[in-house]
Image 1 (tube, rainbow, N blue to C red):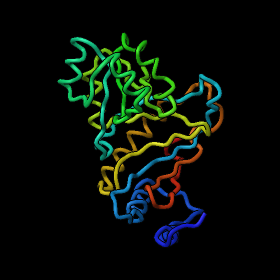
Image 2: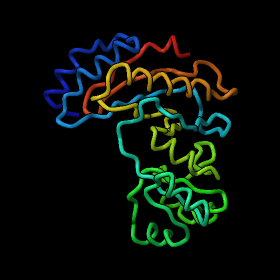
Image 3: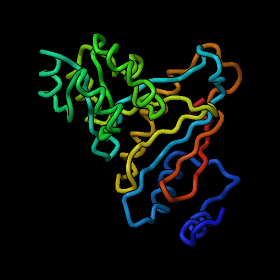
Image 4: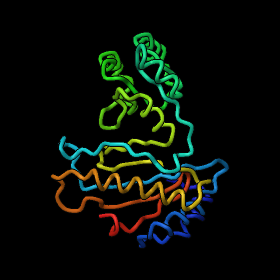
Length: 230
């Protein structure tokens, strides 16, 4: 894969054989985020889990202290008083059965997170084929299937992000923007890692966190020393 000139120059600043401390890694990634837009800073956590076993799946959510730097559009499936509550909490879209054809037939997907009250999951379930592959299906573990829609919407707007294993047993999560201060990125990184460490399945044998990589949208990855987080 041919890399751009900026990427090649940035890669020269990183010692591929070294595992950096958190502060050093954040500094390097910020320094190398030189694109003309505000790049997203991401963490990639390679785990020792085997996602083929249900008991070794990791899925949850954590509120990042400084948010993600991205405006999140929230859709809430609710009726009656709960719909009013969702609107009052600042949900961008609120509805029920009438949203199914709009999403299913018209391909409407102008939202980033879906929240649903438990009684609406029968309706939302009909959208599984559309929402599932996009990671938009509400889930109790992530706090997006709940009667407390006010808390769900407030948390998401405040910077709540979901984490889960992909097919390669890696967790990919944004922790902010290149414009964030090093301290903000450090706080967000720590909140995420603490949550993932806490979510360690009891059946995992051997090393739980095999590698940690920090990267920006266009920049090269920086490996972190995992000793402190294992």
